[in-house]
Amino acid sequence: MDVFEAVDSRISCRAFLDKPVDPKLVRALIAQAARAASGGNLQPWRVYALTAAPLAELKRKVAARIAGRDPRHDEAEYPIYPKTMSEPYKSRREEHGVQLYGALGIARDDAPGRLAQYKRNFAFFDAPVALFITIDRNLGPGQWADLGGYIHTLAHLARGHGLDTCPQESWARMHDTVGKFCAISPTHMLFCAVAIGYGDRAHPANSFRSPRAPLEEFCTFVGFEGN
Image 1 (cartoon, rainbow, N blue to C red):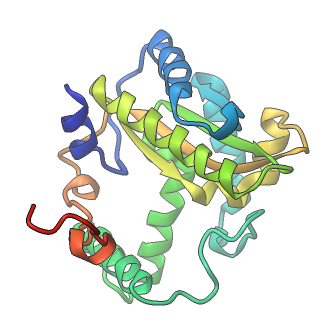
Image 2 (image 1 turned 180 degrees about the vertical axis):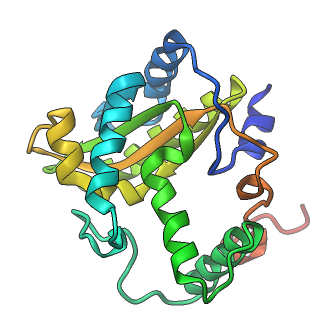
């Protein structure tokens, strides 16, 4: 598919098919995404790619860690969201939750159901490939922005090959377990994980499109009068 379709059809996929991904394709995606814009060409990303038995073992370890408890209380190494969410961000996040849990038939007051769905993050929604993305602790906001650019470039390249992805900041709460398992240097911080595979587009979790604000809400045009 072309780049326009890839961008438009990308979703945060929360259900994957039981279908393997060619390891050569995974390697190519990780390498090609490094063409993402990078201020000063610092290329601040570091990637750890897992599949097959190692991925299954990590999932087993994490499942044992979170059994019978709520991992949403585990501290990440950085604030995933602001402690106080202002508007319009608070409403946008809440609307997204309504869409997701509504599609899955999980009621607002169904705390066990919501927790079970959140824990699906730590099974990578059954994706056959998992990436962990880290960044050097000495780097700053500019490099964090570049890191996001790498992740989005990867997602769009994957979509171009008919794959789906799900960037998962929730894994930042498992930084100690992942760090030990993947032998991540203590000089690096775990930013997120990315699930990769062939998405089950018929699954209810993938049945909705999160809305985007209208252009006029986030862009100010200057000098475009009459065009």
